[in-house]
Length: 295
Image 1 (cartoon, rainbow, N blue to C red):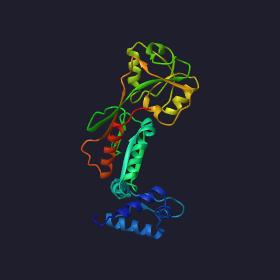
Image 2 (image 1 turned 120 degrees about the horizontal axis):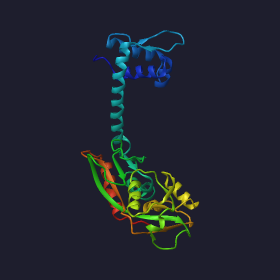
Image 3 (image 1 turned 180 degrees about the vertical axis):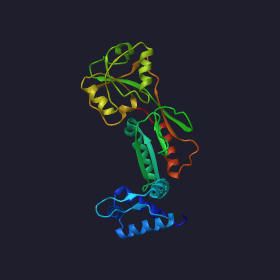
Image 4 (image 1 turned 90 degrees about the horizontal axis):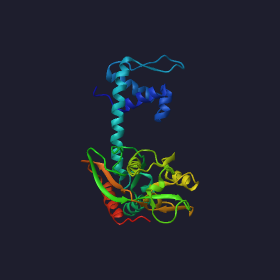
């Protein structure tokens, strides 16, 4: 077994995935004879045939021994890819950092962070992942911006409080703060009930206010478009409005009594050793948000 090499296993997996030696060779960039040699070396190492070769146009089939080998081969290949990916984080220019984010922060705060990182590390590789899940997946990123604390082995750094406001079509409400009671049974557009949205609706319910949620969408621009079209008003964090400029058909109102603000945190897995680039990204995020004020 000491003679089994990763190239043998990669050739085997390619033959299985492609159904023939010739197509596997095309996928790997080898000649067909090279793939045949790799499989022959594997079969010698494991002591038996891993493929039945019916010949002609019929696809090759795994033997029972081949099925055992393939199960372990895929695991080894996956681990190798994970190691290669981890090394790429340090070899891509001046390093690589994977940052999890969400819509409103992506348009308001994140551009400032990316600009400063690029100024300090022009060749750095910054990869952003905007996947709003609850709870967030921290295993696939170096650090993540998230609107709330997370249980488990997670490091937290609070960045800022993001106050909630009412966004309405201009003229639907008089200027100034809007009492929550004015929203009772009024049509409203809202996010899906994930992340911080359930807390918004619980706050309304505790105040005895039951708006009619007539439309839900996860897209901030879609929410604002629905408000603009007169579908209903929306309660949104102020950060949502600090991205691209929106037209004058919208009005923004404070709420009375005010909602508890949305809390924005920077998260990462506890015990993680950061690359120099990731560590600098954390420092810059704290610096930028300490001076950040909603527009």
